[in-house]
Image 1 (cartoon, rainbow, N blue to C red):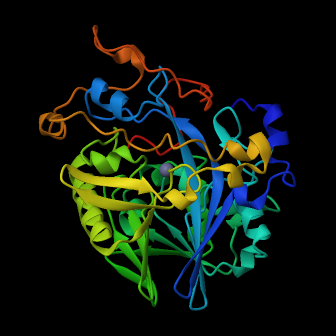
Image 2: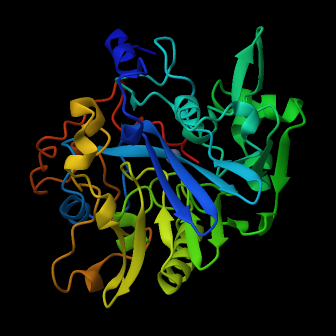
Length: 381
Ligand SMILES: [Zn+2]
């Protein structure tokens, strides 16, 4: 893996204002902190006509890549400190997750430290699914051995992501090693069905992005929060729930999305997904033409977010992750799942397809090393 030595300066730590990668809200008696691990570019290769998804996602570059944020969520409620997803490793020049593959913040550990927390303070780590960008921070090397990073935590993972994971039979360096270390240490709990982590914190199966994918529901007083992992990667997948990337199960994805969208819209819940740009707070609403995910306006990037200068601004871009509305009548013409042409990098576009939209001005998306579409958000599964 190529490592851009210049990236190390970006993660040196102290120069980052906390609000550039840690966002806090209170839900009743619960405190919730979003810890951004930065982000990366990814070509979703959605099963939808290119004209449709390019109109909806105008920030996509000529290769069909978009920039994804990467958010972990710490829920503290009733004596529990539950970290939803472990994120990546510690940013350093030797990390395989450095620029140009990913754009790093100071990292999850630095975020916890800004909150005055040590790894020992985390009581649970909920792994929404077993894709590399969600589990790579689970374990850490100590004295030549990989051990759980959070020594007092129980790690929870959907059983179907453990028993069905091909990487466990032939461990790959990212998934097999990390999950294997948790298993060897006796720290991994495999879960089935709806699971109550603690009063007010419920883990709900939401298969699709992976067979054992889970989302987290927090109920605190009259407040509800859903942390939905990779049920959606982009706001457009709310507006178009049949838009699914290769390797995902389109049938169970659609069913899980519909279930969540109805529950979230009906309850007025806050909805956070892993790969929305930081800060990721938003809501799902039901309109005549379908569901929409909308960033909370109060959290939209503005002057108050820019105090860290250009570096902080990198994590709070303009609201490009919203899904542009379709033209009138186009909803009825949307293809059914599996019928649309597979699209993605511009090189695969059919002759006569509209010219690619240039990357969003002011929000440069760095090209990935390697083949287009080789993003880090999960294997072809
Ligand atoms: Zn992901």
